[in-house]
Length: 311
Image (tube, rainbow, N blue to C red; front, side):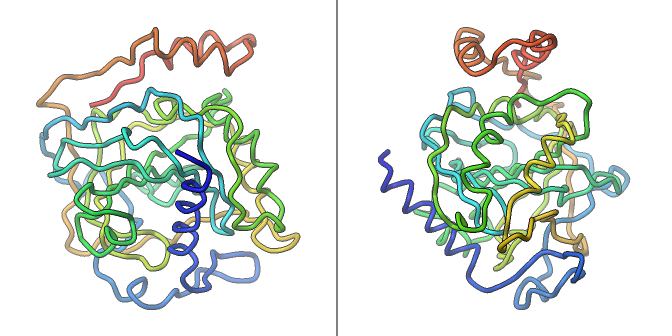
């Protein structure tokens, strides 16, 4: 894909996310009403995911294809509400489970702290891997259908160990951090391996919800793994340096919890289907060697990451 294609994708996300002025809470403002479906919808996200309230089911395995392939031509944007990455290879797909069609990865963005909570606990960081149903030609169209979008929401817990998988994102933050770079697409220098950012998908919550930003379209199938991944608080604080206005930093960007209402939240176990798909070492090792300088604990980190598990 060429740079002009990336620019078109980035502009599309900008249009969707900035259709109307809205903001996250700050020292001056608490959670604000965003209007429209955001305030009146019945299937809004995020919600608290409770082990006690979820319905346990067994389901077919989820399939994440080509997530072990390094992404080398991504575009990063600070849109004033988050840091987003786009321009992923179209071969990165999500299917299986309770999804009736394959979904292709369109975008990754982050929220600090987490939007969903697990059993009432909010985590330092949440990654949203946004997928489009292949029945629809683009995200804008997919937003109009209840099966249009599937988002994997990964929660990251605080750890004393650095998560090196975030390095390729963090070392590019300076290019988009200042307010003058707002909405300016910037090529990501280096590679990103998504397999290192997603934990085991053996057990996960899933429910029918919405986008967590305006227009809050109720077109999302949420998939949230029960397993969380580590991140060092210092890494999260790097994202908090992003400016949304001149000399104003985006200290947090999560939406308040929404009512679950009468929705069914499923807790899917791996009772049916194989337990793991191990990423081929010969595909992973060159990427690891090319992207990380070994420090005292790197061998431990890499050993863990070479056992990426998907269902």
